[in-house]
Length: 531
Image (cartoon, rainbow, N blue to C red; front, side, top):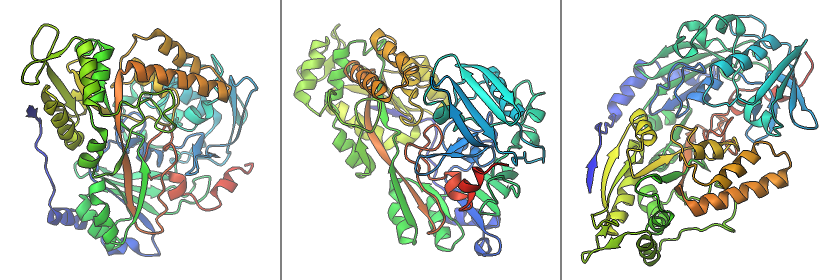
């Protein structure tokens, strides 16, 4: 097995991290009762400027930006839709038009009032300049009347409030109306939102943000005077949390005991960002039999134990990670079945147990993945080489990995994307509209079912259609979900962090829901009152 990685893995020493902590001024005074401050430790730190087109697509970039930009409504940590910029909303009986009444006290950070004109502008502008997390292609008309705005779609959408209104950041018309390319708009005005915090300092090199409280946030005064996000290694963050200098950090399973021993409260939830093995179904794995055979050659229980120390679940071999296995092939580890299927697909083994293709040539597979999956790659690669396959492994950073998937420069790709939140994500991941999607168009019946889901409004009908689609996907196996890692976070008791069922907004599995962290206890009640 050949193994390549383009960048060395650098571990920041504890002493250096503590030095950075002190130089950023995060001393014990941060915990003073007369100036409450939330300190979020982040192993990477820099996720781009906190504006819709500027933050990074992966990681917590959207969530940090949600501290600055509000949406019409928002999901709380019980998955209930709550008022935010809109104090009330309704939908027509056919679910085609959706109506929102704005909260009259909302203001932009520069003091300008937030009006329905801003909301209408946001929809129009984001149709012209798409925002990667929200699909507005089906919006047909937007009407305003006083403090009420109506958004009408080309087709009914029962889930519009959940997947669009609760995810789309509203932007100020008086700032963006003159901006031709928001992805290049990096002036300070790009960071003016209406959320609970405004950006006071941002240092890309240090991975440091300082946000200050929006005293006029319409739901009520945010809980913390400041929010600091700073780059720290987990070892340093655990020490700082024990000293009341850090409040919360998302951590991997390796650091659970370290933080628990520092007195931290540990939060845990399935990530529902399963690692899936994408087959190049247009080249080396054009045969379904080959895909199914390789699936049976993988021992997922061993992947969980060796790569995650048991801190993961076997992924449901379909799209959703919740639900049973009725009608699905679980693809249990079975080398005898794997051998039979690979042979039926045209491969054969030589006297030494090495696999040969239909032309009698050794099967050599290119496996690509991100550096963060290195341990999982090692265990998976060992299983496949022990089974008689020859692998070359490349660990690629985000952009090269995405390019390799899109250009089909792989045979197997180990990828991880969210499988929760927006129900239409199944379709976008399958068809390749997502940058690292399956690009699988061979099964027209599967495509038809996913298209039907976009317009069905009856819950029972939707569930039946989705299950049919999952069973077709499970049989065709353009990719195989392998493991569903558990997500962990450590927090100082009383901080208020909590995981949101099915994730924040469109499905982000982080414990930093702004309603849990920042909103006063009366915020939900106040937001529903008439202005």
